[in-house]
Image (tube, rainbow, N blue to C red; front, side, top):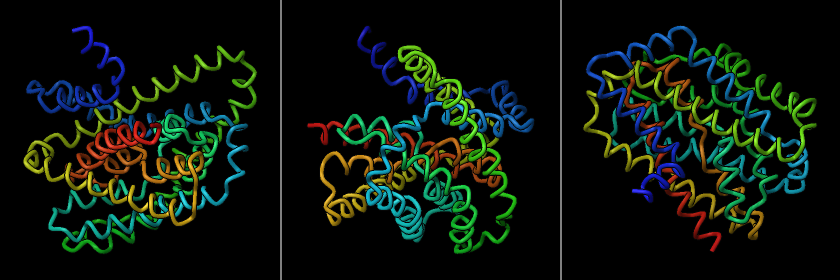
Length: 325
């Protein structure tokens, strides 16, 4: 029993995801789904995303980011993986006979920037340069404000039978700027002016606390998204196995592409880890926000976003151990 509790404590975030999803879908009283839907319709998702990126900015160490500038080639390779390889592979996989909702979910995952937390941690755990990982994370999230409206529109234009899907690129770009870029910059400014002056041990405790706080906020946005898409998700429960296979294939192909580029450009251990993990991992909160805002009718798209996060954490966790060995 103690070992089970220790495992749950260590992996509390994936456990929390499973609990939130299961509880919301299984609640026959409707209390949880109704509360989540009410919160979402009152700008709960947007407020949550804003807080997540503000606190993420506080956690980003600008001194480490500057030191990561020494490996420009590695950063460029990671950005090519994030903004070119991922959408390209998603487009190829969308040729498989999957439904519109699953395809939209795959496209949402593909256009996302890299993670702000797990990828950085895994890069360091595998023996890589965390400063370089932070640099890639910051640059990719900044560029995503401009890339997502354009690339997502191009991918969706190839969907047949979905002519009702339309994206106002300018509006989406402004929304992403307000909810992602501006809070991230304000968080960085707050760290440099206030937080950085804290003693080292206090700063470390604050960063650890904010990381857990952010993960709780991610669980909240998942709950709001599940609540609104509950009926569609229950109706499409039979496709979950196919979705798992699809997102696993997508992530494995991304890792193969990263491995090929790392080998082709002769990146040695210490440089390659941040390129692999930051180039292949995708942020979850932003994909859920866009699914809720743009495609609430497609519950399968939400399932793709959440299950991809599960799958890539499992695969990359195994990869960290292999690379560290």
